[in-house]
Length: 443
Image (cartoon, rainbow, N blue to C red; front, side, top):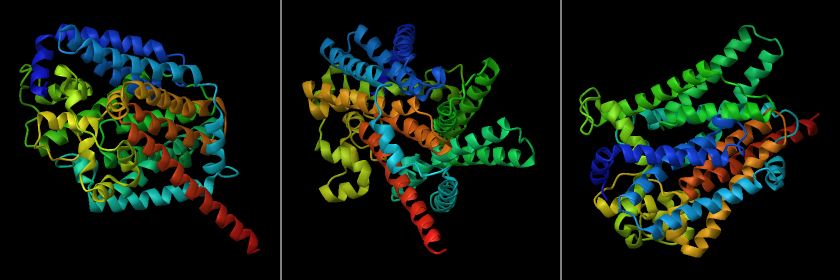
């Protein structure tokens, strides 16, 4: 089913689609509400409850309308169940990941030197990327196309971004709780806001601001400070996040030569900008409506599973050169898009989601094992919240949690995000330790 076909289906069966999305999202919310640290403000809800809730709701609507087979529905929800079961059973029972984080990533003491080192490196990278490629929000096509050839620098910047935001927020909260509420504290808070806004604009994702807020709140909860936000604060955060998403979308439309204030194609009574936002939410299910109706998924091509898993680590461009074909064209999401639009040659495209990746790259039974493995990894990272540490540990834990959950949407990329943080902060810890040893030996 092409996207045009799906949107025509969705708007002609809007009650069924909305009811299915609401019902599935509610079930997914209930399934994890007791296994998250920050309640409904936990980033897992964005990926699991909202993104997968929307996507699975669309799948249910298509199934009820006779477009998807019972066999594929069974596979999809069986994989989701096994991942949920492993995660919910183990999320507060694992400690091996915390030990690894402390050994490899967290420096002795408060880690202030390492924090300032990361801050300097990030600002240098941000300036380089701004002058080299520009802000992600101003990309003419999309941020993936804009960053071609700059992937390594973007990954390092993104690896540091959420840690810095979490750590700066904790510094602000610490000073405020200690009664230090003077000029210096307000300057520090302005620095926090500056890093949050500029880094989000540099990243260019519509989710970037919300991701930064998630990292801040999770880091705060890691210190044992209960996060309580009333209706007004939640409404304010939602307004800021919504404004940023609309701003990015408006820039994309402007770069495409589309008048954002003109009437929509499917919803003529609302501006094009609002319609595109609605279509973007429905596009959470794009890989499913591309691949599942008429069993299209069985016709999609694949390359080696290790090629797909390693490509985000070594760079998609480099891996493509090594194997002699564009490996990003063989993700399940991109393959499903190319099935309908074979001439599409722009970077990016639909994500694969763990369930489609598991089924297509591992097969029916091994796919259960892979889904359980993703649940185990998420439970391991989530278990960091069982142990209190200092600000450095809390900021690292927040960055790891927010950067790990994308495994649900693109397993190889989520794994690469996790390893990026381990590699980058292992280097930072080693460098800080070497400088301390050198200063002691020089005395």
